[in-house]
Image: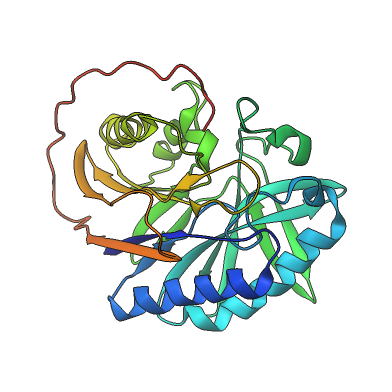
Length: 282
């Protein structure tokens, strides 16, 4: 399977701009023969919408604009980040689209709440193991702690902060119990000096510990306010690094892809221990 991550330089609730970069990423991915494309966390709305995440308007608009992306996904599976609001609560989700259909919405389970992040103000955590359904104009889709399948490969999600939790808490361990071979991580992780080294070890060690392939894609640029995103894309398998891109580009779309043979054995690579990050802020 050819996997790709696309770092996008988005603008909060600038629907025209955000849809244009999403479409460009999908078109580039199709031209490169990509089978599965991960876009960053909240890539449809932008991460810095702040208190507008508490409004019904933003999530309703995002769900409506998501419908425009559906026809672009013919022949490819695409993961798109957006907020979903249910019964007065907003959830940070990744929608999974394929061949013009929405397969479901994976919801973020842990929220970053230190440094530059204040996610519990805007979002509610999703409980592990729970699912529900959402409706839009007569259609229904599952939402929650979901596992998907594409070309015979089972995959699930850790959304940004989910991966920074202690091993006993993070979703990855529970996903492995459900037969997942691929973990997809759409992120909006702020830039800090040497943070890329921590992320690098986080992805490599997760891929080895959980005997899986791990795909990570971050936002790019300074979409609003004080947060800068470095646009990091990482793919690792069983402790082996398969892909790592150049950070802090001036592109609007940075697409990177690599091939993974899920049918071939790859012995785990021994990793040197690294120091734990000082903070869990993703």
